[in-house]
Length: 103
Image 1: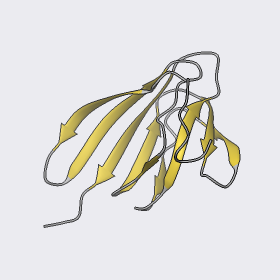
Image 2: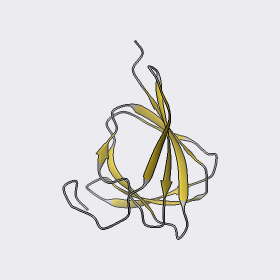
Image 3: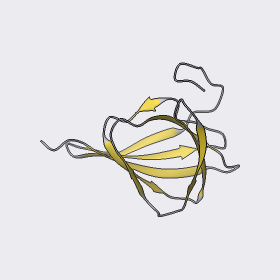
Image 4: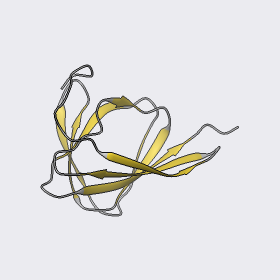
């Protein structure tokens, strides 16, 4: 899917747990096949998978499968653009921690 395409997939549900001057912490829940839709990250961030599973990552140029392991975090820099899709037949959950610029 391109950044401008419309999708019939269900939407992932983000619940902000913390939002202060330093960080934004969001729990993301994906029903089977759910997606974030196309977005650009405005901050450096860390993802903490709460379950083990597979996510389909569409960066606008290619689609790939990312294998995530519960509790095994990863970091990405500001500016990442993509759509993230649950490639499992079960709900997938991760926590995203975005780091706001120091003041």
